Amino acid sequence: MARIEDVSDGSVDESDARPRRGSPMNPDETFDDILRKASEIKTAQMKDKRRAWEASPEFMKNTMTFDKDESYVAMRKSASVAEKIAFAAPIKEEGNELFAKGKYAQAMAKYTAAVAVFRYWIREQSGREQNVVKYYDDEAVEDPDDRRAARNLIRSIYLNAAQCMRKGNLADGPTEIIWTCTEVLAIDPSSAKAHYVRALARAELDDSASLELAVKDLARANALAPNDRAVRDAMRTYGAAHAEQTAKDRAAYGAVFGSRNKEGLYANEEEPETGERAAASAGAGASGEGSDGDADPALRALQNMSEEELKARCKAVGVDLDNPRVVKELGKRAKARKEEELKAKAREMGIDLGDPSVRKMLELLEKEERGAEELSRLPAWRRWIYHSFDGTRWLNVQNAMYAALAVNVVYRVWKVINMPEVSPRGFGGYPGDDEF
Image (cartoon, rainbow, N blue to C red; front, side, top):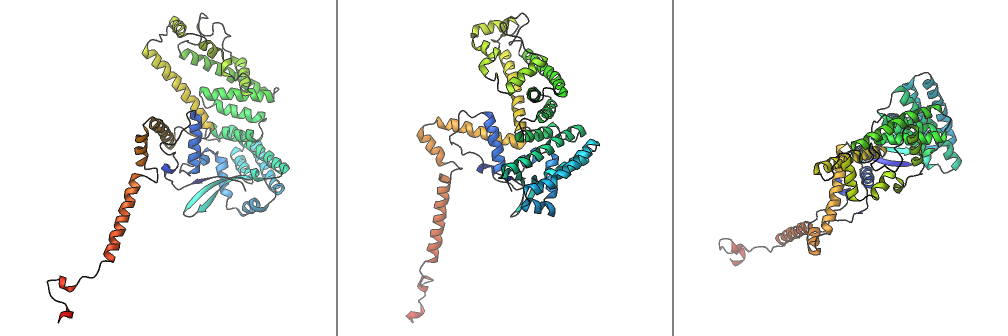
């Protein structure tokens, strides 16, 4: 069985998970890298929030109900891939029949029972702690044909489950559908249906970054299934919504990126795309075409413009870049949009930036990075003193003092034990028995 990860109910000291203060940090490390590092640390140290468990949709969590079922336990342990497929396929078909009848909750239960043959959560006892462990048995299959057959079944179950959650309104938010479709695309990147269903779920998140991702998904789905009317209709709808949102974002920046009299940064460039053109452009971006930042008309125009010209153009549309309050407002808006994009990326990675424990971990990482930068600028003798008192290092002044104290105590105890006997003459001056 392929054991993917452990998530424990116990707690572990966070200081063991953090990088040591003063340790070298990568100056080119991006916020995405920090997010990924936070996720890895939380999983590796088995934090109580159990990130991977929480990211899983409900129907996957329910696979845990089979961890004591004798038929499942025996099959997972010794059955061949063909036997597992023969067991799971009829259960999936029962789910499809229930789905066709509109019995979505019952259908989801069948999809859970079917996928639990290959992918599942179980409870394992480790000493006094109970760990929740995720297994992807299909990843341990060595024979390519068997692995392909197992994954084709899993892909079909996931796709049906995603549509069942959407139609039956069974998902706990769009993120469960996004998770399921992303798993499908990890198996089959050319699944137009997975791109389409994920796009609809992303559009429900109601933020500009997710809407942009939805349009890219739809563009990819349209490229894979150009005759699918539902995909084309969704492209028109969400492509127009994305173009409208883009226009609002540009307007929010005081028309710096375009003016009514063609005197903005786009004066000699083509106008923003709308509708299907926006969707088509997004599709090109999704496939890797036109992804170079230098090809962006706005960026190219801005790079070729002097500071004086930029200020003059902004002033022509009523924006004074010499006004500190205006600059501050532009910075706030840029920061707000960046935070939206980061939250969307974090959700894709299964991280909730609204979770206090995640925020605490990121703050600790940021603090460690700032501390390392400040420490590197200190003179060598001050760095030596700092390291001497650093509590995260085993060799420091505090530990040396404790060791000296322990040696002193041991020495005193040894001295008392080996002290010579005192003659009775020492007590009141009376002679001993040997002097009579």
